[in-house]
Length: 276
Image (cartoon, rainbow, N blue to C red):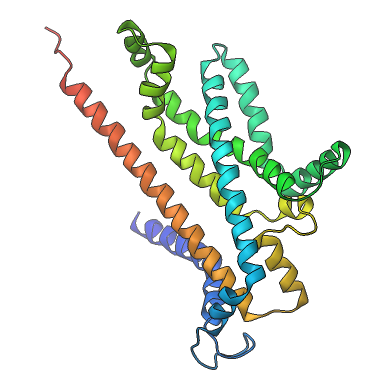
């Protein structure tokens, strides 16, 4: 038993090493005073200063953040509405059908989604740029929000909503004062996951971006094709750290939501009248 436990730990650490070693290697050489990653000549902040001195890169960074914030906010609203609509369906067969359609967008290759949007925008005559990237990011972010919110809706007892209606609450009051506060941890988790996916997306954005507008992922790809520069290392390190902060924030919000649900269940159990 103990041997198997140790073997599983070794396997887990091996997986983490394989995943994070290239990222740490990239971040390590972002502080290299040399020009290449073949040898560490000395510590320097030069490549980070070069990143922040690049006006064009800062504009691209602003474009990326604006797209991520707008797409995640809009997709969160649409995803919450979609999750509530699916949850309110009475037939389980209809719920499973809609969930299957929702999950198809998640498991579909990004290349197919990007090519599909490119064809759609070309047919509709939509100019590739800010609008096309925003619409595409909203489209692949909505299913993620639905997946995050729907389990929280299923955790909610139907008697809670019935009790609110019996006390005179309108449907809007039930939604705003009962349902949304209960699932807020799932809403925040969906928002952060959509934000992370939007910031990191390359394949879909590569298809739908146009001249004069681009995002960080596409810009990094373009610069890497011209030759490896350690400024790319610095930029990639900053993006990784920002994404890591988002993931930690998502974890903390999810954990706080679980603790709050556990506390509510504990208080409800204390108020139960024992059967005589």
